[in-house]
Image (cartoon, rainbow, N blue to C red; front, side):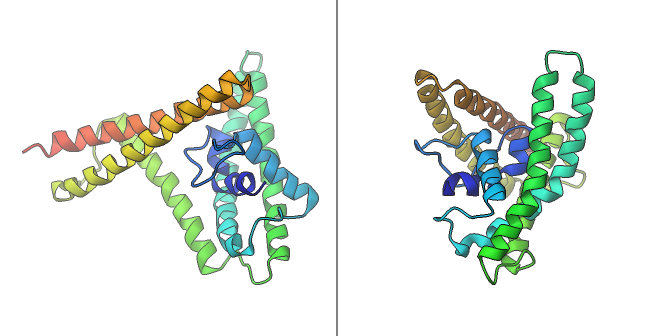
Length: 235
């Protein structure tokens, strides 16, 4: 329960929208990544029981509160997009799937403040305004903002105005490092997906396939941006 619960906080907003970009350090019972359904279920269980899993230490309370704060910031826009998608999908084969995602987002939105309250009551001294919580929330937001910026640059094919080739080596270093980490995560996910498929766990395999698609898209964006930097700073 511990890893599923922490994973549910760590990647909640992206899990509800398009599938998690990644769950830092989290693993499922069999060593693979927990599915979106696992994360949502673990979060909901805490909200319903008003009790933290016994192996969740209060030493991570402020970090979890920071992740909750970041997820709460993102959920309204995610819900709005899903509501629009549900309206557009009405009467089509996609309607049920989009409605299910919207229902998940709405459940998560109602569970998050309850879980935050459980953490605060279970861990005296924890605070959503603590330096650790604020720092974590800022990092989560920074990651989402960075991914959005990379995607915008990759799709537009234009580097930001004022981009200087003096920073190109550092940028390429970071892009290459990120690509390497993604390659490792993709390889692990593909292996876990094969195990899940062979075991007949179709829902888990499908969740992993969605994450693979999402991560592959992120990697494609990184490669595209790297190519733009190379082209602009070839001299």
